[in-house]
Image (cartoon, rainbow, N blue to C red; front, side, top):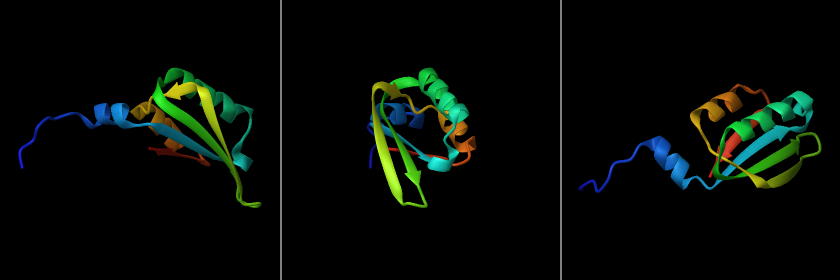
Length: 93
């Protein structure tokens, strides 16, 4: 085994990530949460497609919305803020 190249994990994440999915519980949605997510998206402009999913655990229904105009960069700061939000999860593809 012989290494051909060495790259930082953060560089690989930014180069290879294609989709960033944010999942929110229906009960958690309010004006403050929407404002926070809009602020995060505007501060972390990048190349990943952004998808937002809203789910209702009682009715077991999920609605997925794909953003056509906003693309996002999955930075460490973004991931940390999303981890701190209750009822919000994310997935990076």
